[in-house]
Image (tube, rainbow, N blue to C red):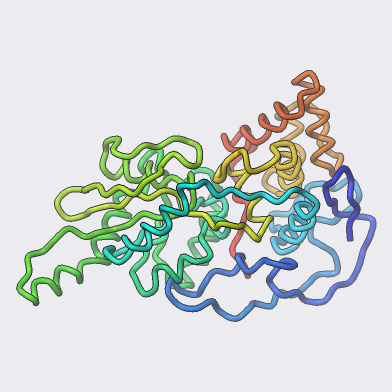
Length: 367
């Protein structure tokens, strides 16, 4: 149940209803919330999640922080996010170089001994390509959740437990500071050690292990390589679309790394995921309306118990209890930017990306 205010769907705390258990797919396309049980196996059967009489954050009309508890019902969160994004212009971004890169990458994958998939730790489910499992087949894979410094310890523990149960090797990293890079190097070499064992059996000389680094735009692939090499070999910048061609670089005498441009679907069917990509700056800015995205971010932050409306109030010295992100953006534009809503929206997004509201993930593992 909800009402629409200024183009954004808002939860209606005055309405209470009983609902049955839901499939773990937000209507109509939340398949991306459920990752495969293993990196090469087919997707598991759909999980059934029990419903509640009301969403967990719908308390009294004045409770905009979701009851103030530490546990957020992330299914309800995704359901609300779906309705918030439904009336907005679809977010789509597919630069011309990606189609060419995708074709070349598929050919290069045949040469790889191990694949390192890099995702944004804030949104691990939204930053994996839906065709990745098909492309990689049975190849060995290491999952890297980059920007671990941008999520809380509770978020890290939740994702570590989730992927451990799936039998997936995960490395949490910070590509800017180099945290996790040595562990990643050891993982890659150990997984591909069998390559040279087989070569010796055939009387061939050993060769460096070939590891390809793949992932969405701006998740930190090139920065990770530069930290591994301890020098700037690959162009890197905090915006999507900087790397535009495949490039092999050597790490010592026993590891070769392939840096690749970000690969993203030609059409993003899951608009909730697309909004998260926009919020985290993992997609080109021209693909979305900054004001709309910032308004949804405000509504998300007020629902997260670790952030809440109080963080917005403290940051901007103004009230954030309107339940409507668009109204908040408009108020902030008058308060600080002489009515310029674009500048106000950009400030909110920039502050989130810099951790000014505290570090928090926008996704949690599916149940």
